[in-house]
Image (cartoon, rainbow, N blue to C red):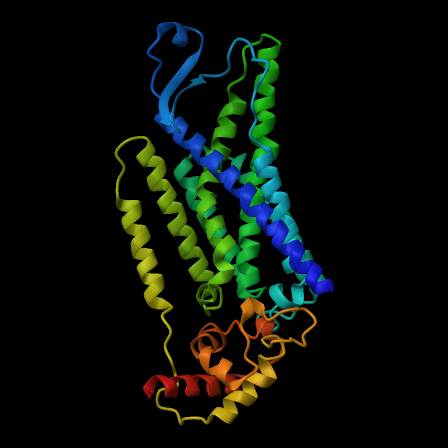
Length: 395
């Protein structure tokens, strides 16, 4: 019953996370687009009252006229819409998922003894330290002289993110490491909103309410953090879906793959941000495709059993029964799984044969199964599965 309740909590929190994430990212992308499409106001009275840019758009059968003030209007309207709860709810639901799946189930999803022999308490403690420490380091960098040069700052940030990707992959299972990487970036994003963007906006509103000229500096800082957030977005979205693709996190060089795909996401976002402003160079897109092609070729599966002796099906059945069927059965005996994960059942010869490709991919190519190697599948047993599968391919 405990596992059943945990599954429902996982489903509901994940659903909430996706919904609020769409709202947050959609709003973020829209305002970046809006800023980059602003034109000088055509009406002189608008310019005289402080409007710095405007844009006309059409959507859903209606026309919209958005204006942005250079700093703030002379008086604040009674109804002023804020965009913050989308970010806060996305982060809170994401942390709830991290706690439900990766902290509560640390032995299953976060820890891999073959990577680092950590206890559950150690793994969770290190995870929290990464999340808090990531924000502190990033915030200090933003307040340092490095932030004055956007290109230098971007390079330093890329190097630090690469170090983050490498280090978490030396501590956690591949799946857990990817989620940890995304949790650090996601926390930085929401902390930017909570500690910098919203407080800066509040200062500008308060000054306008008092009838004072607003200090533009909080707005400049908020803009800087908002731009950083938009470049973090695509890497974080990849991490959110990465648990479905063991070929990435299960690879020996999973840290390099994570760095590469994060770079691809940032390059694509760079292109679109520049495209919003007018003509944009295709160089970021070309580089992103080159990096993607290199990753695809580099991690393509290569069997090492082509010339090895064939095995009989009895050997394969024994391995599957001992190492896989405790979870992947019509009635799993492992307490963490009230139902077979992903509906995959390997408790009959017919089911094993039907899932041959998946078994080989998960146990030999990516080596992510058994999850956390809970049932201690040996290298020799993986070789048995590899030789069996290659034998099937040669038939």
